[in-house]
Image (cartoon, rainbow, N blue to C red; front, side):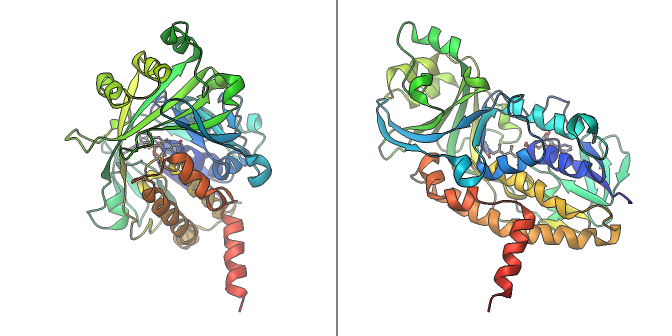
Length: 414
Ligand SMILES: Cc1cc2nc3c(=O)[nH]c(=O)nc-3n(C[C@H](O)[C@H](O)[C@H](O)COP(=O)(O)OP(=O)(O)OC[C@H]3O[C@@H](n4cnc5c(N)ncnc54)[C@H](O)[C@@H]3O)c2cc1C
């Protein structure tokens, strides 16, 4: 059966998932501007049941990623006392757990799925070809031709643009300027701390309730200021419970700092410590002892007029960047990647544009609903409340075929 040639721009979370999905039946090449370890930070990422269901269907090994299943949610006051504890069996309810893992470990596992020998994964097809240190600087979306920084070109039957939140190629696909991400005024300081470092910082104080494994019970917890400032810290275990992720979110107001590439921007620890100086002492000590704190001014993107043009489709943050206030950004990218299963074995080259449009027609309305709910969380609610409110909608998605079947059923009903 003839295969399509596929080019993916960007080896982030969406691009690598797409590479794994498509390598089974097509020839896939991924162009990445960075090196093999790019797009990773030490901090955590939580993948919800909707994303995990898809990952499990492509052989994701949660043990290799050190992933910790999340078995419930908890809200704490800033004094460290429990306000609410929600025990949920996500696997039973939605068919998969939520998984918390280090971003770097997550991306490495996706890279393995995209590139490991097919026999190791028990699948057909060939590994995706990775081309690192190769920024794509131009694109002809109708013809499916890219130009690299060194001036060389390459072409494909399918062009997948997964170049992230600050996508350079987005405007070429939508055919107009003006769709850039905007800062929301919220700032997230991200820390990953090991158990050993936390114990050193606590200097004899016990591990906080939200951390100590017996008490933590694999919870994703939100420690909230409980006042109008709506400052909060989201905490969850990582790396087989040997690390903890702390995402400290506060309204700081946009800075004049260049926002491009700020995944890796170092934070001012003093500013962070001041912002959370009224929170309980163990948390303050852990924050103060952090050696690596990254800062990210939260940004999002207005819904785009289209994600597709010719034989090209935008996926992941390039299509729909959103803040982490529902923890759904990467999940949406994984769902986008899964929708490319519509490029079934033997798809003729001339059918590619209409299939990409079909994928967009499933994905875009759903993503816009998730974005709209995520934006509602910017003013007051934290990630845990917002996630709890939108559980059913977010987690019950089961892939593009199910979504299309549901749509056909709706359309057939009088
Ligand atoms: C603080 C924070 C916490 C978050 N937490 C969560 C969470 O818990 N759960 C969740 O689901 N989501 C979360 N998100 C969102 C999630 O991180 C993003 O949605 C996700 O990383 C987007 O993946 P992507 O593949 O689209 O982009 P990226 O992962 O950013 O990858 C883009 C890739 O494209 C490459 N690239 C860029 N330009 C070019 C070019 N011209 N040529 C070649 N390569 C190029 C880049 O180097 C990069 O490797 C969080 C976001 C933030 C800011």
